[in-house]
Image 1 (cartoon, rainbow, N blue to C red):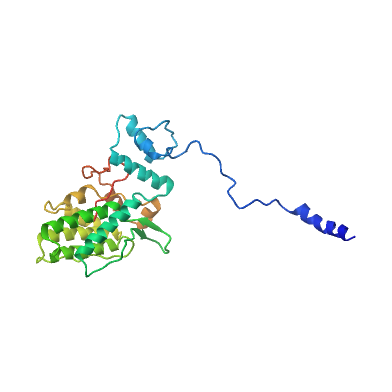
Image 2: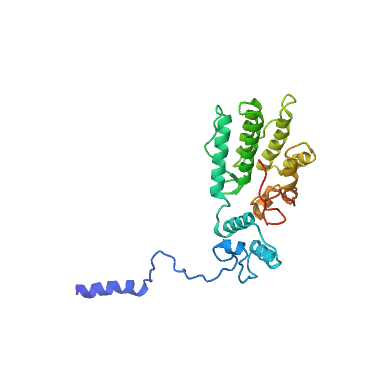
Length: 288
């Protein structure tokens, strides 16, 4: 009798229960070709071994194929840049992330030798937050910004000495420039006529760069245009030729509401030896 009651009570469970699957991906399948990206390793495609080119490839890939099919090519440095762009596009890897961290450490070490009494954070956040929460950010300060800062400071130390107070003043202002990478609006003050000419010219560039990283693009453009018209400024050529194309997407561009932003990013030329704006979809940055 007990067995019969147990069987009857178990019947609804057997009739109406559903099959349960373990918590794991059940959609894994082999991938023999990609719709939008070239096959890994990307270095092969970047070097000209393009294979069969699909019309569904993203434009950033078709661009490289078009160059090779027209008899052109890319230098070793340009190929590396292409691979880093594709890694960012298709694998969500930040371009040059390891090298950027190493270069930031070089900058912090060098500025620490000059500004011993003015310590800063042991790292610099390079993604700038935007919007009402902390979940939205875009890469703001590029690898080359820190490379240029190291090169410029090394040159000023060689020319004027590590004990020069104006070299220290340059470092203090550059700290403010980089403080805008992750947020805020910190603009260095202009220096007076008592400062040497080299510092006054450098400061103009630092102020313009600070406005750019603070996303005040209209003010940045006006200041970079003024620098470009000053033939005595060491920043004149970079200001006119190689403002970088940062990794804003269309959404971020819309949210900036900047009508002049595009004109800043559409500078066509670039410094010799760099992936130029007219030879790669994304130009490296020369802001400091």
